[in-house]
Length: 638
Image (cartoon, rainbow, N blue to C red):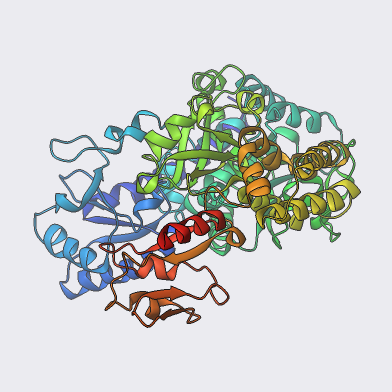
């Protein structure tokens, strides 16, 4: 063993012993973990933490309370995990302040685990099912999310005690070429959306003999409904830092950046603390683990432009220029930040690196498909019962995600489509539910893997309006450099807006298809090249909805505001009930001389308040498209 590796091994062994001591002492007394990532905080996790600490103090009970990250079960937030000596760790969901206080009284102070309020146990036991017993447990396989929600993201010892930084200590004794070779062999493809082989990108950068090189973590996550990168940064920031350090060692860089959008304040805060802790522990900075490897990391906060997720636009932003994509080649790996060779990887991509280096490329390839090995992290949003994050092997089906992980469609509604791949992804109907989730299968289906956003839609969603919504987003986020993207998407959006108002013409469909082809062909970056995808996929699979808007002046899903009206059925209206009148924010509902409620359509803003307020035993308020409304009135007069 070389002096270099001996020094690194000795230094890291000291860190491991210290971390093990910190980790083991957590089990000496009751441990309470509160999920306090952004999703948990939005649900009231900080108030829950205060209640627990106050209750413990009032009863003079010694217990450790820590705020952890997100386990992925966002639907059940706030989450509280309680680990009491000689008991399994129990996870409680939907925790209110009252329940939090009761858990301290009954479980911490007493011996009643209140299993009727338990969501699941973290270990196998005789009383409470584990998450592995859930339908999603049969599908889920955690790699980068393995420790999310069960370690303190602001304590480096928790990360090290669970195998953290072992890969870095191991890799320092290897050449950068060996590290690159391991990543190439693993077949890891970039999880930021493009799916480009990570090892090939690193190899390209390493081949350039420059004194200065850079590594950048791209955390500019801007897709509607996507929160994977944010969660990993908030829940396990050291995993990302270790991946970035391994990338730097592999390509020969000594300077790195984390490009994080400023809308992620908690992620920024926790990454800052993680960098400071890693520097104090000798895992970042000068002479890492006593070797000649140096790496300084800084945070660059982006201002929220979606196009800056494209790596050349990101670089321009960092250089103080407008975030506008540049022509390639040269690629950033050849000439990136300030003209120097630069490797840019997504948060998820970097998070896999420590696991691959520690366990080997063959281990990584055991999961997934031959061309898309490993796992994928998805943010499941929309009309599913259980929203949140999930990590699954590549190759599982859309059906497994929607029904096993998401527990099906909320409210007993009918599944209609799933938007996968972010705002530039495709909308796939029910006939595609058995499609395997991997880079190539989704591309063949007319969608894309993207960064992992997935929005599920039901029978109440109008696919014309969905296409308009996503195109409106990408059109607003266009940097304006390419004429086809700048003007073509605007023209497409104007057509979609006319159609959703019932003012379209059949020839608009051909115009949309022609514009989509030109925008895809004439745009420089993938924002423009993929912006028409929602329009193309909805036209392919839901053309009948476009035609209904155009030829019949109605929205089949009753979603487009200009094509619906709220109407109160006289035979169902309870004359003594004024719930709808009291709920209307614009006073558009009044009683006629027979005390029957009537909606003034000129005043109505179609907010649905009257329908929500109408008692279910009456259900007198209905939502209709104009042709249906006319027919209803004719039947009523009939």
